[in-house]
Length: 130
Figure 1 (tube, helix red, strand yellow):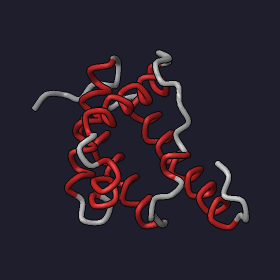
Figure 2 (tube, rainbow, N blue to C red):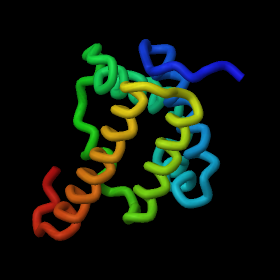
Figure 3 (tube, rainbow, N blue to C red):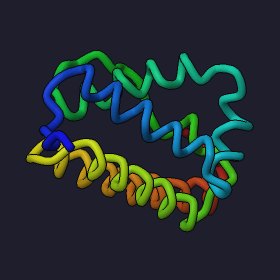
Figure 4 (spheres, rainbow, N blue to C red):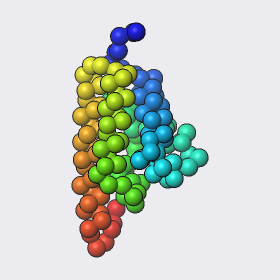
C-alpha cells in the first residue's frame, strides 16, 4: 500500500471532493438531502466544491461565492452535520496525511459549527434574511 501524501494540488482536491461526495450520495441520512437538492447537477456542484476547497486549502482564489445561503433552507439538524463531518474526516484520513490534511479537517469542523450557528439564528429570526 502506498504511503499517503498531503494535499498539494488541485488533483488532490478533486480526489478528496469526488471520494467524499461519492460517500455522501450513498449515505442513508444525508444522501437524500443532497440528492434531492442537487438532482442532476452533481457535475456543477463538484466543480464548485473543487474551487471552494482549492481556495480554502491551496490559497488559489478560484471560489467567489457565499457558501451559507444555498444551505439555509435545507432540512438539516445536528446529526446531519455530524454525519457530514465524520464522512469528510474519514475521507481525508483514507487519502491524505500531513499539515494540509489536518487543516482540511479543522476547517470542515469550523464550517459545520458555523453553519449550525447560522442555521439556528436564521430559523429563529423573524426576517429570515440571508
